[in-house]
Amino acid sequence: MPYPLTGATLLLQGLCTNTVVRFLDLKGNNLQAAGAEALGQLLRQNKSIQSLTLEWNNLGPWEDAFAAFCGALASNGALQQLDLRNNQISHKGAEELALALTRNTHLQQLDLRWNSVGLLGGRALVNCLPRNRTLWRLELAGNNVPGDILRAVEQAMDHNQERQTTSRENRARTHVLSKEVQHLQEEKSRQFLDLMETIDKQRKEMARSSRASAACVGQLQEALNERHSIINALKAKLQMAEAALALSEQKAQGLGELLATAEQEQRSLAQRQAKEHRLEQQEAAERESKLLRDLSAANEKHLLLRNQVDELERKVRAQQEQLFLARQELTNTAAELKIRAVQAEERLELEKKRSRQSLEDVEQLRAKEVEHVTRHLEESERAMQERVQRLEASRLSLEEELSRVKAAALSERGQAEEELIKAKNQVRLEEQQRLAHLEEKLRLLAQARDEAQSACLQQRQTVADAQARASQLSLQVEGLRRRLEELQQELSNKDQEKVAEVTRVRVELREQNGRLQAELTAQEALREKVAALERQLKVMAGDHREALLDRESENASLREKLRLKEAEIARIREEEAQRASFLQNAVLAYVQGSPLRALSPQK
Picture 1 (cartoon, rainbow, N blue to C red):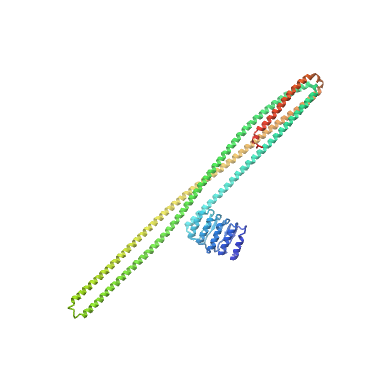
Picture 2: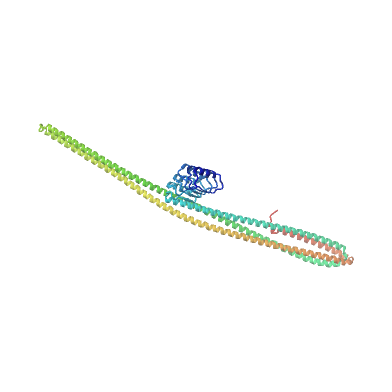
């Protein structure tokens, strides 16, 4: 339903502060000047409308209002589609629209069908398109625009569309690559944090096991003290104690050998693991540096190819601009030649008219002179006849005078005829000179026409050469585009290789974690062996107590042997203390020099 003028203006003023409406259709409302000004205010203040349809609204005849509307369109940053069909937009309105399009960076579709843009408006729109890179659809059907301008508009639209497609693809690929890199960084940091947590857990477990071993050593020390007190209290059972001590010495030697072999195995295993870990770290660092170098080289190639593509696009634009200027010069020269030909024909007609007029004037002048001479001759003849009539009486006496008068008349008549012939000759000479001058002008005009035709041929040749260069440049751009696609494929392959390398490093880290866990299980097995040995020692201590209780009666006879055995027991105790200290030092050195400690952060 069409609104009245005031209603449409109020509606547009109300929409200035609206932030919800995205599509506005005002088709067939005859808005005219007030509506155009209200539309300009709407485009300046509203930031949400993306599509505006203004078909059949008679906006073109009001040039000042339409100029205000175009100025508002230039500063608008939200409108993407504009329909201005059947609005009687002239070439001046098209020039205002072209000026607005040079500053607008968001409009993508513009429909100007069935207006009165004409040749000048089409040229203005074509001149503004190289500075607008967002408009990819411009409709100019039904505007009396020449075909070459329509083709130039189509080429500019295709170029803008290809540029937007390429930029969108590049943005999508960059976004995907950034997401992938961010994901890899997050995965790597998460794996590193998991590894640090497992290392901290292992360190805590090792500290707990060292504390447990220290407690076990304390308990063993307490058991030894208890055994010493029991031996001091039960010296009578020394003989059985000797045998038990011999057995215990043999077992202690076996345990010592086992501990020594276990320590040696642990040292060798720790050294081997440290070497393997260093080698793996070096290989991982080399792989990572190689991947970074490959990625940087691929990025440099990508930037170089992008710069080449931009340079070729600039060259293509320059060639297109030269082609358009050549076409424009060709049309201008053709128009000037037509104007000159028309002027030459007009001058030729004027010269013909002037020559005809001069010939007519000369003929009239000659006729007047002949008439004057004939009249003069007739008058003189009448005078002579009157004289003859008056002097008929004295004819005889005056025959000589009459003959002289006749001779004078004849001479005057000859002079008059000679003057008439001279006038005719002069007129003929002037006419011949004028004809020669006109023929020279015609020859010069024909020469100028030939020169213009040769210039037109040269211009056509230059246009054909420019078109050939443009086609060659387009082929080069196509080849570079294919090369860019190949490089992008190589970059994707490199990314896939990087992902495979990362997955392989993850697998290796998991295998390393499995080996560490296997080592932890081996340490747990060793701890269980130590606990079993401690239990055997406790059983042996119980056996010793029972043997001492059974042999209390033999204590008196074996005191001397008991003293010797006490010295030997002291030596064995010192050796056990030394072995315990050696074991503790070895465990601490193993904990401090293990690869897990090397990977753990410094606290």
